[in-house]
Image 1 (cartoon, rainbow, N blue to C red):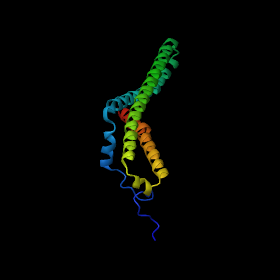
Image 2 (spheres, rainbow, N blue to C red):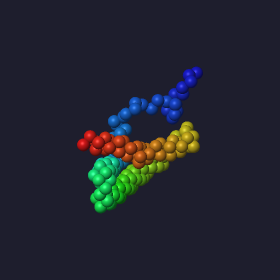
Image 3 (cartoon, one colour):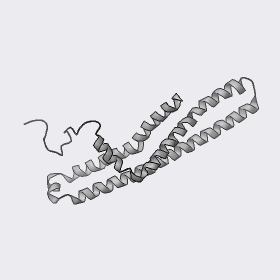
Image 4 (cartoon, one colour):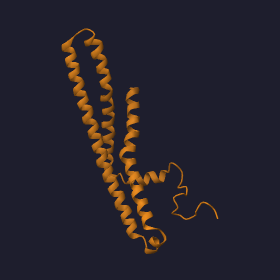
Length: 169
């Protein structure tokens, strides 16, 4: 008897290659009308990265031009500008997280709805062959993993990409 089970529901079975274009297209279909929110979130992410980089630049100007020369009035305006830029950066970051979260919730709603409908269509013998606890664990953990991908994984990838893009400019 082999150590590896040949049943289709066995978690130890290799599920396929690391990148599957068909699977990505199927998942992308759940994005639907949320594409605008995601693209807007990416734009906000780019602007947010630029405003975050403005802080150290303003600090350099404050030290070189105003602190070194003792210009208190100029330093006041740079500090005020620094606070405004920090506020804009925070607002952009909050908006980006909000849009991404809202889009992610809608995407996961559609995915959960389709999984629920699929489970409702399955025959009774299917549930006799497969333990319901394992099916429910797989459904909840797989959907949660996809939520983390759409929610934080894509944001982290896009944030890294946008920061590197802004740094090159």
